[in-house]
Image 1 (cartoon, one colour):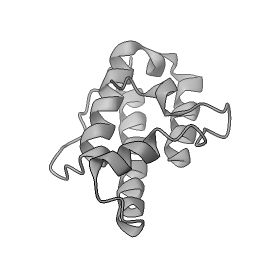
Image 2 (tube, helix red, strand yellow):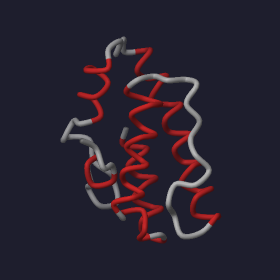
Image 3 (cartoon, helix red, strand yellow):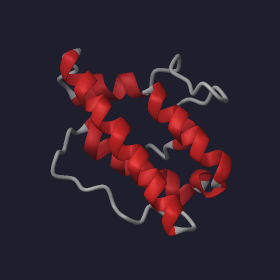
Length: 110
């Protein structure tokens, strides 16, 4: 999870709109479908609410890469329920390296 948070931190340094409510809500939707629910059929949208196509592509690539890693880790550690995966996501001890942000700084989760 920290790898994803680090990537989001790096993107936010250049693209402040990553912290806009609309983008944060889209991020939560992607993470919820791909990681929490393990919905392998869910396609990450091309448009994530960023101000430029380049920013949308960068964010999408980061999500694809890190969520694939998280799913693999969930399989290895037998995080076999949505509740277990959500708990790991919400772990307050997991923070981004650059600025110490937790998941809720980036994700507009319920």
